[in-house]
Length: 75
Image (cartoon, rainbow, N blue to C red; front, top):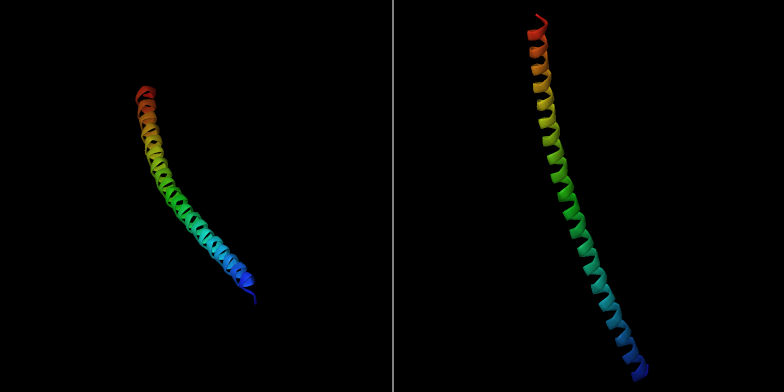
């Protein structure tokens, strides 16, 4: 191998290493984004559960109040 071929090989290897580092960084960012999205979805599901529970309690209270008022005015 000539000196130019060795130099070209070193340059190609350096570029390949740089691309590999960039790919690792992209994968790390993607995984971090995925984790963030998963955490936010979990928080939204927890919030949805709370909202549904509160809506159920409000519905129960309104239903009971309606029955009381209906019975009071029908008698």
